[in-house]
Length: 395
Ligand SMILES: [Zn+2]
Ligand SMILES: [Zn+2]
Image (cartoon, rainbow, N blue to C red; front, side, top):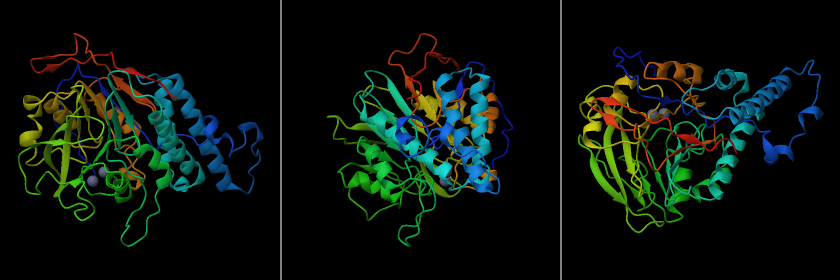
């Protein structure tokens, strides 16, 4: 679905939006995880004459690997370096070269990213604040000292399940150690790039709740919750019991849509008091605008996680008034290349909102501080955003 350029571009001189790009992105060669399987660069083949496919795969691996190094040296920032942006744009080139789709370089990158996320979650939880881990497509994992929440986590790739054909980008066994560390899953809407029954079952089989849009997986488990009616027009406040905490998690479910498809927007308030709003594939128009543009009047959103190609994104960001914006859904590899929105496109878009920034892939993380700086306050209709968001850097 293509989106039109917003007609209205409000002044957000104080707002810093962050393009929290890829999750799919990473080389399969980073660190020790892959060294056992692959030779060092110096030991690889040099000549690829009459081996065009092999040459392209090797070239992609080299670029993925180099991008990882650049992201490590140039961590997330409100003012990303030229090097950092170039690394993102190099990845855009790879993700839009369909000769590389499903190739070993891409698969290696995906697997490496999943391992990095799993390794992060296997380590200690953050001592304070909110850790935000970007996963593939529009998937995020939110972690505080007390809870770990997953949103729209999928394996990527084709899916049918009941009719068998699956062909995921990620093996379920690579997802399993990630899910084992999460307390609950929130699913925005039923599209394959957001909802994955195999992933959901990893939650329910472990006794963990899955909050789903209306009509999805209704016969899978009593642990799949459907708080919002398909024809709802008003948000509903719910609580979700988690094993990890005594008091249930407070969530406001907004009754959004992608076209005519019900799409839940979840405003999740952590026990530490941070509220994170995930957009799913919310359309930035239609009747939903009546409440979408008034969210700021109802709740205080600390972090907004919109899909990057949402129409009227600047207007919606103003309506939400978050302290931090991290976009998602860049380079969805299940789409044709015209709809694999590039990082450069998102940088261009967020420039219309504010000063742009870009985040690194996979297991790189933002931390959102417990104590917001004095400047991080709403002043009238102007949102002032703290620059104090820090990154833990690459792993
Ligand atoms: Zn989507
Ligand atoms: Zn969708």
